Image 1: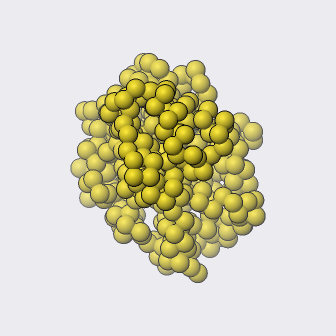
Image 2: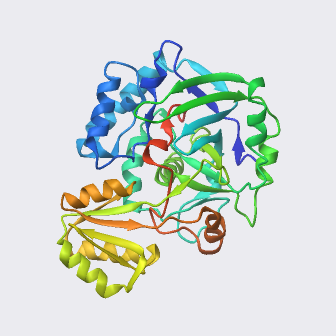
Length: 379
């Protein structure tokens, strides 16, 4: 049997742990809204929480000292908190703002994934990997005894053959967790799946050499692969992910907007206007002024990168037009983008490779994966 996908060995907190305080949202969310993470810190104070074993990007300025503390806390949790072991797939039901999203926790073979341009592995990146963002994640992971995924893989399964039939039988499976997620994250349930057909069904989805696309967490998966290449061991060869059907009605694609800080707004607007014609595909916000242009992300992102190099500024990637408008009112240059039609994703990735980085987001920030399940990555 091809081992590109297999049943995981998952670690969960013991029954005494508050699951609401344990699970926190993906580390790359709310990076320009430190108040979100400050509130999360208040909520989880003094309690076991994944907040203590991840590195929120809003706090990256804390440097390597936090990494050492993360690894130390992971070891503490292995000896006294992560006491429940689940050997099997986990069916996930996540109540989000767009409905109930279904997923399947599994291990995937990192030999089948490659993020480098031109590569055509069976698990493919959907966005361009920012190479300078991989080493910090490698540094965090290389000393970690466990992994906590916020990686979501997409399955091109319009006939709903993989996850949905399992959900129909969920009452026959063991319920592992059932609780509300903090900070507006909705509700989550998970069942241990006893099924011998998952691998066989999943592999039938492969088309033209491509089985899964990385929908979220591409840089985290890239770091996992790099750590495996640096120090191969049987546990590090695999990574824990959640597989979601691209055609799940609750999986809604959202645009990822831009906010540019420290820029001369009028100069940026004028330079952009000189590069692109008027249109309706992207809107720039400078103060109380809004102008729209006919430009696609494949051309926009190189323009932004070069402009920043030449003029000195910083860009952040923002979920939600309201947040962009708020930041623009505070002096940033706001850039509102259109959403990608999700049905175009697999054909585009097969034909052209990864899309420009931060081309789309799957749902609102609160709907991202919360860290919950753990898995050993060192013997």
